[in-house]
Image 1 (cartoon, one colour):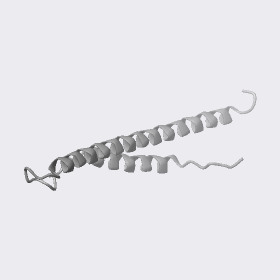
Image 2 (cartoon, rainbow, N blue to C red):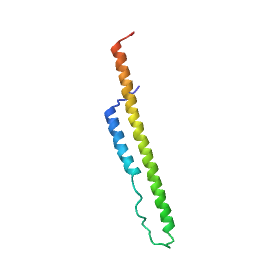
Image 3 (cartoon, rainbow, N blue to C red):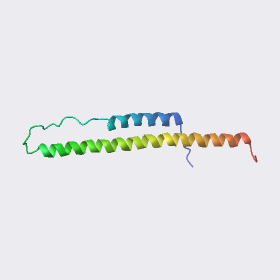
Length: 95
């Protein structure tokens, strides 16, 4: 069986960095459209494309935020398991 070494501070630091990326993605205000001339045949298509891009960024940001939350919860779960194991070890065998 392979040993997995989990460093919870590193896991939490990764979660924090991901959360910062998610905040940037979710906080991006829509920018000006590249095509603003009324009556252009491509104006509707460009508007639809811009809307789709902002929606995709929102979905990406939500996914990154969920991953950051999951990493933070994993770090807490590892620490809880380590604390429980240490408590069992301190009690000794048969206690």
